[in-house]
Image 1 (cartoon, helix red, strand yellow):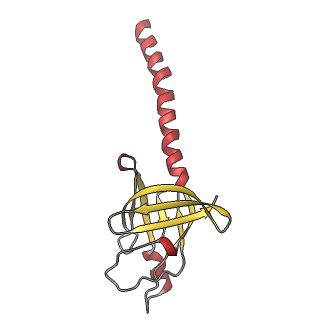
Image 2: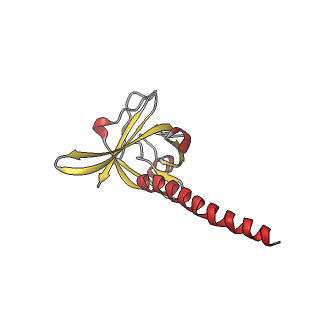
Amino acid sequence: MKKWHKISLLCIIVLVPILLIWRLMMDNDTRNIVGSWNLDFDNTYLYSDSVFLEFLNGWTIIHEDGSIDLPPLYVPNQKIQSTLNMSKGIWSIDKGNDSIIISASHHPFNGRYFVKELLVKKDGRLLESLQLSNDSNVIVLYRQH
């Protein structure tokens, strides 16, 4: 019986720190992108079947719980609440591909994007930049560092 206790104790001593370090690393990746971001209209390119996409604002809010509020699209003759509902979605990180998945079926940001995080200087201010890109879209978000 003593041998079993020693093996169990050894496993706990070795596995618990490994699991804690792994969990902290996962949270750090998520923590870097959670929060409020502003869309950089000048450097964002979206492929769309419609001729022109017009956003009501450029705010993107990435929540810790996996939900995301995307910039609402202007749609003529559509109620504002419906427009806001269409700008809600969910997000997740795909560790294996260094990508983020945005699921919002009625929004042009819907899709899987490669993620690139940068610090950039713009108009004398240091900004965090989050660049999301795939085959057809480039989305650039920024916030104060």
